[in-house]
Length: 125
Image 1 (cartoon, rainbow, N blue to C red):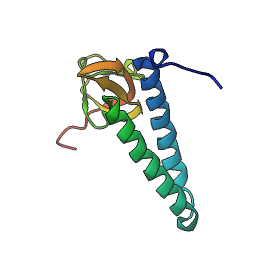
Image 2 (cartoon, helix red, strand yellow):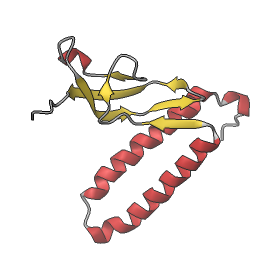
Image 3 (cartoon, rainbow, N blue to C red):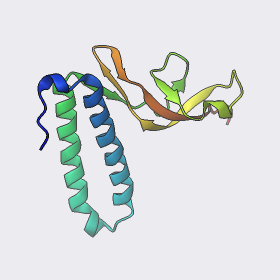
């Protein structure tokens, strides 16, 4: 077993751990949706409990996980878009999927999130 002292646990390491749990949680949700209700009930309960625990621990650490899904994408958003190069400059974009949430502490970005974007739908559509 590795012995770590609190000084070894920096904010980036904790943020990475939170992001990895977030990704695992989202993948588990998708897998649960494919299971019959009789088989998925226990897993849903366990996942809900784990997500509450993560939320409590993240709060105790003073961190916040931010998911920008459906937000208007702009240069000041604390995330990077993996597919931004697929669109011409000046295209109005919206976040279509969060790949990794942004992790913040005390209004400062600890870890930049990653998203996918798509053109914003006009009000006429």
